[in-house]
Length: 367
Figure (spheres, rainbow, N blue to C red):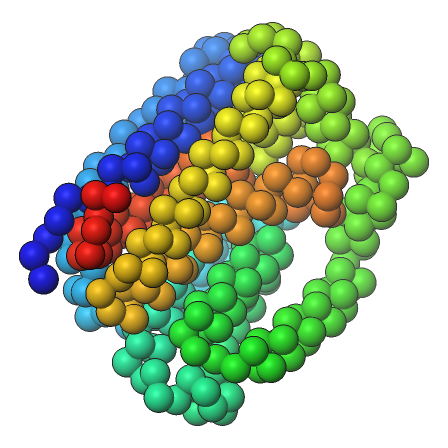
């Protein structure tokens, strides 16, 4: 099939979100950066560099025929598993606050779980599309794909990084369901997953504390509920139009690491309900375009790949929004395109490039 122009709207939404992210990272981090690094532009310069790398990754993948990814599914699986194991190797893995989620040296580090997300989406999409006749059978179709999800889930959960492990499971189930699995099987797996989630929460005191903070953050405002309360203060202070860009009070050492997972709170405080709504609408439009590309993909592999990428970004957005608005227990989920972080931004933009490449093969990429 002849290549068509990429989905311009999807690219526009992506670049707008990245641009908003750069502005908000600088606004949220400038005070902390000056205090810690004696350079108010420290986080901005790094995020800008990662955005530039991410842009080139997006452009490269935009011109990389997505069908060729099927050839590398096993390579991606093996590489991601090896990297996930390396986070536990002393001298290679980087332990921060009791969590081993990075590998690297000095200021150069990467989060293998971001690569694992890509590997899982590609592997499941290829596996299901090539064996579509088996997906209706739980043992012949669903179970082999669950094993792949389970490998990633266990390795990431051991870091520990339950939020990313949960995202892997959710996106994996979405791909399996769209691939043709029976609804009964999916509902059974969701129920089993919910039970497993409860057990894992009860196994760790800090997870119990997070749930308690969610149920009543005001009961321990200076302890377990501190982050949630400060996030709500920020969002509430923003009102309709916000206090003004750069004028957040909660970023002044009230919200820990405001440029990371709780950056949406700072955005809501500075830009108000209007600014927050604009970002939410951008994400919704992004998801709609992604689903449209999936629906018009020329083959099942392209459809499932587009579904997986769109679901990954959409689920992360919804979970981050739920955390900062106290709609679910606090968990470390970055806001795609906007939160500070190199691995997340680069690999997310690379996935958008894959989505844009799929759009070149749809029947009406210009619409």
